[in-house]
Image 1 (spheres, rainbow, N blue to C red):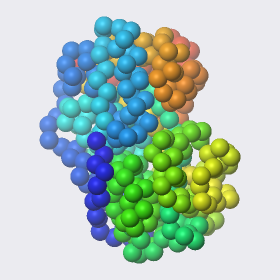
Image 2 (image 1 turned 45 degrees about the vertical axis):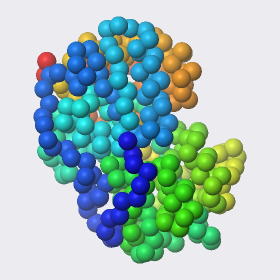
Image 3 (image 1 turned 90 degrees about the vertical axis):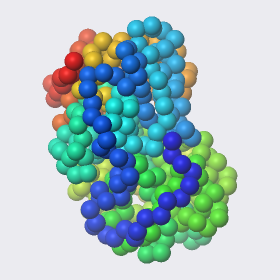
Length: 349
């Protein structure tokens, strides 16, 4: 669970190696995987994000749907500290399915730091969401990330979040340095209100809706979305690690913000659920099949699940170079969703 406390880090300087923050405390090592699932026979432990997030609530809806409609697999949905925490838990054999983002999945496959000691191969299951990340402040008069100064306290998502290196890298294109701090998502508004945090991060889910903790933030402090300078946006466009995108904030979403830049630029990160090569075929296939057959009912559990009513959503923005679990590959072939560019993985049963 993401702790609602602040953790202080050293100052972050422009163009520093992105892996030095956000993943240092995850604890990738300490145990290795075997062919058994973390929860036991036919029980899969699914980890996602903090208890206050829509992502965790969504995982509970998935688990509830599966568990109510089959006795052949049981999904145990648990909160976590974020995507890199999920990697660590899977590497230690504490979880079977994790909510990933593109950067960590691809770096694991390439064996690059800070993931070079990971003992498993990530295998993709389904696309969950696109999160349009924005930097916000309650500081009067601030309109751009260039207003951030060396003594500004910035939380580019909590420590343990795999999204942090991507957002830190984005900031490096516009900001020379700042004081890196870490707050749980739900604690950011009170920290800004108390003057302990200058810049927080929020995410517009699928460019369509925002979580309740963001709505509470807008009610608590004058929340200002920060813009980006043109030269930084151009540089970010050449960086495959940082998927940036301009978008128009709808009137409904813009309501309640003290300032909205024009254009609004978001760091648009794709999030997929992945398992690993130690998880056997049958429970994965059963989970996907039950989700598919009961997706109308599942859509009533959380707005995230409404997107799974669209067939193509399941395989949208899948990660290049990261294979699918063989059960997922077979499942999508049967549904007519498999593409030539997808790669079928293997499991160590």
